[in-house]
Image (spheres, rainbow, N blue to C red):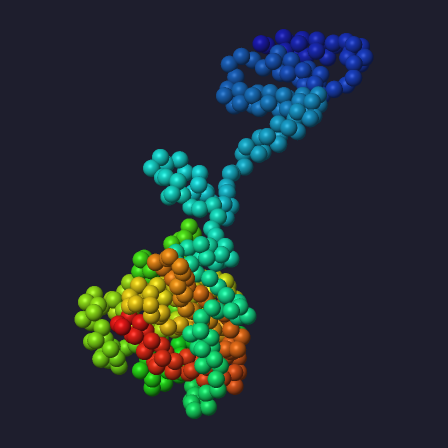
Length: 394
């Protein structure tokens, strides 16, 4: 196209009548059409790639301009959709996939996690339906056992013959205050408060305090009920009879029980020892009902073992159980009663007994608690072991 032809086209475009255009509303779309017509007429064929890219860009801009002028709502929706699609998709770290959505065919219903676990209150109630039955009695209730009543009278009697070492009491009380103020865990309470206090109460008596936190009850002495396995059946500490201090008694029992199983615990050490009082420990914010379930199940195993090994109609002696939640100590008396036409006894947990409870918040309160525990130890190494040996040998 020469300059003369180009000039003629420009003049023709400039002389186009504008009457009809004036009668129409001025819009960006008409201007865009005129601009594109002029560009198409004036641009020679065979333009460079740069011109082609420029033309495509102008076409996109014209389309967007037309849309913005004629359909603003569609333009807005398109912009939002484009922006949303271009955003990177990322999940917060707190979002995790539930294992219940798995589609593996080899997972059975029993392998899937339970939707709801039993509460401590429900488990405590279920124990009354198990075998053996475990009943929790309020301190105001009639225990239905003369041996349990006699033991309570013995434990509430004054103990003026024995006094704890002052430096031991000061150390234990200080440790209790530290654990409470610092919100220490259950393990700290066991190591720094409960076990030292029990060792103080034992003194030179032929007893020992053993940790049984990782030792389970033999399955044949566990109560059978529907919620089995929901709650821990272990306690923290137990007072037992060491072999070197009771060699005569152990030798006398060896011929009668060749398997050397002298308790309800499935452990080579503790299972071959006679056991006495049990202690469950919780931190200051521990659950009392949960602790009662643990103590009740564990001590019921001990009562069941003694019941299975008794001779004649002799009843195993009652035993003391204790729950320590922070500075508070609650005492229970656990014993068994015979149920008509039943091979298993009914185990009763009587307490907590307010006449025996104690604290470790002050040195005075700690000393009083130590004297109470001393009475428990004296009963354990005298009347308790004598009645137990008599029940399983006579």
